[in-house]
Image (cartoon, rainbow, N blue to C red):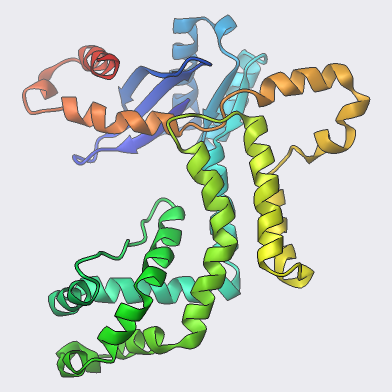
Amino acid sequence: MTDAWSDRKRRSIMNLCVNSKMDTVFLSSKECSNKAHTSQKIYEYVESCIQQVGHEHVVQIVTDNATNNMGAAKLLKEKIPSIFWTSCATHTINLMLEGIGALPRFKKILDQAKKLTIFIYAHHKSLAMMRSYTNKREIIRPGVTRFASTFLTLQSLAEKKEQLRHMFSSTEWEECKFSSTPKGIASYKTVSSVQFWSGVAQCLKVFSPLVKVLRMVDADWKPSMGFVYGEIKVAKEEIITSLGGNEKAYKPIIDIINKKIKASWWGLFGGTTPHLTKIAMRILSLTSSSSGCERNWSTFEGVHTKIRDRLEESKLNNLVYVQLLI
């Protein structure tokens, strides 16, 4: 499993971990600050790690769906065709959520929620008022990289619905200088809108089943691909139920999910190809997510102190390896 990230010093680092039925363990990290993350560079790094452990011990590589990773997959297939290159389930489910969130009926609500949250946190006065009315409970702010954080923002707003409505209808808010600004007026209208809160409730109903699956694949315990396919099927059924079985309402959502799933063939025709089905079952029992690599980000960053920055990359790799095994 491999992934790339940038630390607080904006250094670009690639991680590579190994997953087996026992656990996920760190194998290697490589700083690539002075190199573009091209398909060729990713392929060379992954291929060198494969040679390190022996290609006969490697069944698949798991990464996100970025174009450069898919390019590296093609290069690896030419060199070692026996190794599969699999899209990360965590990233795929995030793409499903993003696709659903881009539908007009959800996008409007998500945009309103984002603008409201940004406005509250942009000013000391509005932030202090919010904390006062919510008993110092924070609103989870939407992140840039993962759509699931947007779901958490909606959930957080829904939990504080009454407190926020009281805040924006209070004398204290009327006397606040930000209440008469365009963004302040827009925020007041959002919080006072019945349609907005109704939209938030519907978004949570639709997104919740997929977020539940996302939490499973993003956990320390890595479910197999076969397990994930089963949970996705359950999630689709829950979404259909939450929309009252209205095909016009649920079809665009299910279509987005289905575009990311390639397992339906086995449900239709797997019984007629028993030998191929056995192979598929073995493949589907493999890990489905590369997010385990992310667990090592803070560890790698933690060993890069001012003193340790002088160490060679190989020594830093060893230090991270030891740190993770303690």
